[in-house]
Length: 195
Ligand code: MN3
Image (cartoon, rainbow, N blue to C red; front, side, top):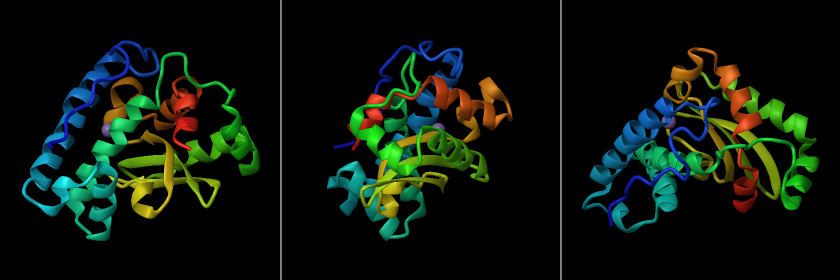
């Protein structure tokens, strides 16, 4: 079965002023659609075709298939990225199970600092992540379309630091985008639901 572009779980203007309708229209309708189209072409008639998306991501990485890593990865990453944001998101109130893990990690401020630093220090295109590895939280970054599934951990939250995710709204100020995103858009219930 071919993959398809998921609808956004909110209207295009729902995340303003932190992420504009123009950004969401280009990012979702154009960039994400292109990854879906490329992925469908790459898997057509191959052994990957019958696998769920998570398994394609892992197999692409094991098989060192760069085109599939990036396009399967980007379909997975963006499909989740839309659900990790919500109007009126952010804040420090976390679901209990997640709160316990954050305390063990070193607290909310440590998490915020490390997550934003991961996004800032990713040179060029990529993602910053919060994942679960061995029962503990882990902050990391990946290049291009790679994600923590490929590296053996369970992604709980990711932020897109490709320029197409922030250039319209923040120009080159990636740090402003990351701070605004973390403080105002993160849907912590969805992060906890990934545990
Ligand atoms: Mn993107």
